[in-house]
Structures are given as C-alpha cells and as structure tokens.
Amino acid sequence: MKEPFNPFVINTYQGKEYFCDRENDLKKLISHIENDRNVVLYAWRRLGKSALIHRLFDELESSNNYETLYIDLLATQNIDEAIQSISAAIYEKYGKTSKGISASIQKLLASIGATISFNPMSGTPELTLGINKSKQPHQSLASLGEFLIARKKRIVIAIDEFQQINDYEGTKAEAIFRSWVQQIPDVRFIFSGSHRTLMEAMFTEKKRPFYQSSMLESLQPIPLEAYSQFITQQFQAAKKVIDLDTIEKIYTWSRGQTYTIQLVCNHLFANYKKVTKKDVDTVLNQILVQQQAIYANFQKMLTRTQWNVFRAVAKEEPLKNPLSKDFLQKHNLGAASTVSTSLKALEKLELVIKDEGNYLVHEVQLARWMAKL
Ligand SMILES: Nc1ncnc2c1ncn2[C@@H]1O[C@H](COP(=O)(O)OP(=O)(O)OP(=O)(O)O)[C@@H](O)[C@H]1O
Ligand SMILES: [Mg+2]
Image 1: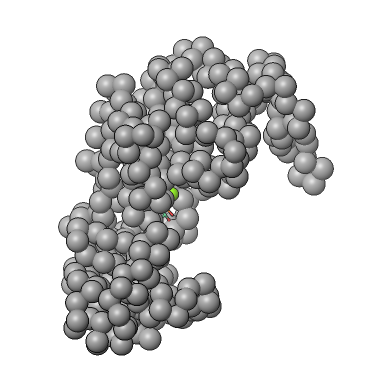
Image 2: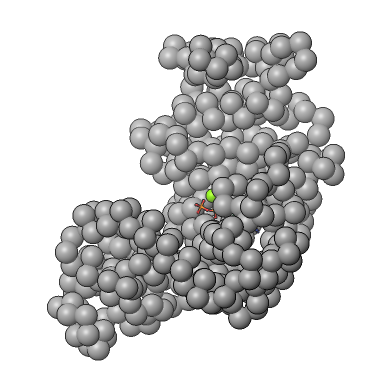
C-alpha cells in the first residue's frame, strides 16, 4: 500500500495508521470469528462497514492463523455474476504463483465454466464465466467450497453489499447461498450491506433462509472523543492546529458519519495550517456546492409531494412527528394521508430513515444542502 498524501483518507482502507478507533467493534468481530459465529455487519450508509472489514482482515492475516477473502456484490446482477466475483477473489488470492497460474486453480475454474483471458490492453489476466456452463449455481458453489475447506488455514469470507442478492432474477439466491454456507461450516462468513433495512429483513424475518443464522452487529458512529483524539493527532503530526470545539462542530454537522467527517478533515488539512470555525464554514460550503448537480437530480427522481416532504424532513431533522399539524402547516404539505404515503415511499428508497424514533434524511450532506433551500 502506498502512503496517502493526506492522512484523512476518503476512498478505502489505507492501513491502521489512518484508521480511527473501532477497537471495540474489532474485538467483537474477532471474538465472533474465534468462536465460529457468522456475522451480519450492518449500519447506515458510509459509517465505515467496508473499511472495518479491511481493518479486521489486516488483523486476521497478520495473526497468520487465517486467510481472508473479500467479495463485493455491488455490481452483480445475477447469481452467475456473484459466482464470478467469488471465483475472481479466489483466483486473485490463490491463482498466481511464481510459475504462472496455479494448476489447481486452473482446474477449479475450468470445472465451474470460468475461463481466464488476457486483457489485450493491459496484458493482465481477467476472469470470465463461460456461457456454456454445464453446472448449476449450487454445483459451482460446491466446487468453490470444496477448494476452500481443503486449505490448511481457517478461511474468513466477507460478502459486502450482500443485500444485492435480493435483486437477482429468477433464482432463489438466498436459499442457494444459505445452503452453501451450511455446506462449508469451517468457513466463517461476514455479511455486510449498505441497505440496512434489507439486510435486517434478510436475517430477522422468520420465513427467510438466513433467519437467525448469524450474529447481528449494528455499527454505530465513532464516538466524538475518539474521533477528536484521532483528528488532533493527525493535525499535530503535520504541525497543524485544530481545536476541540472546531472538531465538535464538524462532527455535529456530519451527524457523526465517518465519510463526511473524513471528507471535511481532508479539505481542512489540505488548505489550512491553523483551522478556524470560519474555515470550517468555507469548506462545508465548498463541499455542498460541489455536490449541487447531483443533489438537483433528486428533485427530478421524486414526485412533487415526495420532494416537499423530503425537504421538510431535512429542514426539521431530527423530526419526531411528521404527521403533526404544526409540521404539515409549517411546510404547506397538505393532508396527513398524502404525507404518510410519500414518507413510506422515501423510507423504502432509504432516502429517509427512522433512527431511534427520529426521521432523518439518510445522506447527511444532502440533508444539509436541502435544509438551506
Ligand atoms: N475508522 C475509520 N477511520 C478513518 N476513516 C474511516 C474509518 N472508517 C471508514 N473510514 C473512511 O470513511 C469512508 C466510508 O467508509 P466505508 O466505505 O467503509 O463505509 P461503508 O459503511 O462501507 O459505506 P457504504 O454504506 O457506502 O458501503 C471511507 O473513505 C473510509 O476510508
Ligand atoms: Mg461499504
């Protein structure tokens, strides 16, 4: 891994040094793994689920007792593509040897109908899943599973954006994955997803295949104290100054959301030596201006009532009672029944979320932008 230029990383996990806290979360996850429990890691958007998985994997790999595989299903549309992602992760991890591509991996991939072709532009090998598959998804998964359980070390697989399998057409993906997990009991699984409601439903509804199959771990914002310490240290190390009040202002504006805090600090760190509250205002404003074109699109996506309700939630958040007379009148929203329907639609899209009884606009930056309209 290359050292980042800016200690406030905003893309991915860049190593322990740039990772704030999460010590308790890490301990809990390790304990689940060490005691043979599968885990569901869920949280509101951009709190740091994926980064935490990478942090955990860093820890597990360096203990030398585990081998880890990270699989992201976000871009997959069907079970074949999911199998391709899993095969690609296995190929990345085990396929390349000093003498070329490992023979056992070649055999495994061929047996599931996957072929390795070479990208003519870059020359790097790429995995494609052949069209003439003689095997059913569950058979392919079984072959991959057999390969994994034959490894000497314990395997931990993280499947990120797992809720995506709800969108797969025609196959009972949940049932297929569930039986795969049961076929390879020695392999530990971490299921993670950015759609919290869907993830919860998959693991808590009685009729669903994954019902009560895993430990539910809901990730919370990093506490202000821990974040303050981290931010202060990063600034100090570069002989820059930021005070605790200013950090609290950033934290509150960001509603504790890791990504937004990182983004704001990244800009402040880049542009100032001694950060004042006025500098924070400047940066917050710049961030919203940059996103303006994207945010304006939301208005086009929604009906007029939905948009009005959405904006009203942003202006009033945390909102307790969206059907109260005061709220409806203040924002000119019309009948409570219409507002209730719109709110349900917004919740289904996870644009609006209900957190501990309060309605919030899920995307914190969008919320701050709409509140200004
Ligand atoms: N503990 C941390 N310390 C520092 N930066 C972090 C930490 N956790 C996450 N980040 C940063 O915050 C951003 C968002 O994190 P991440 O992508 O892991 O969130 P997520 O919950 O997986 O988001 P999504 O809901 O979009 O899947 C990333 O840029 C990551 O580098
Ligand atoms: Mg993620």
